[in-house]
Image 1 (tube, rainbow, N blue to C red):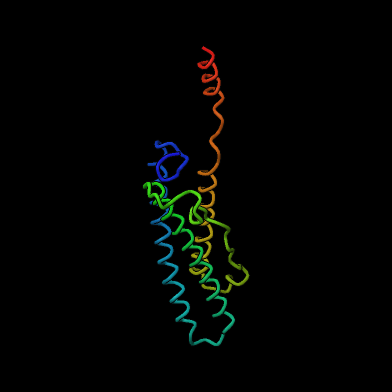
Image 2 (cartoon, rainbow, N blue to C red):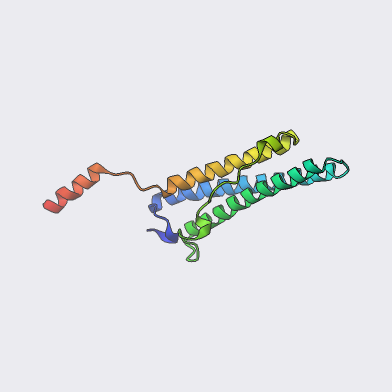
Length: 156
């Protein structure tokens, strides 16, 4: 185990750090874009009488921002683990991205295209993070040659 609770050798930490930083920037930009787009859609729809559409927009806005906040929390926790923060361990709840909350695409079809694009982008980002987490948490592949050399060295 290396500093910060990571099971990865120190050589992979710069790669992980770069991935986390890039994803963090992407998530923050998407969160800012989502905030602006949902606020504009809410303000534009305030004068309309379609209450169901406004309620649907509020629900999908909440799902999207929650999804993005989970992503950002996961990235901040990974950042802390990589930095060696003793308070950030692999067993913390923030160390796992969790299960996605899917958008209701039958409802989202009624929204403006930019809103649908943001919702889809947040789902794709969540899937990418979940895949990255699964890869980082996967057991290291067997190294049969190394194991054989170790057994040979032990016998000599």
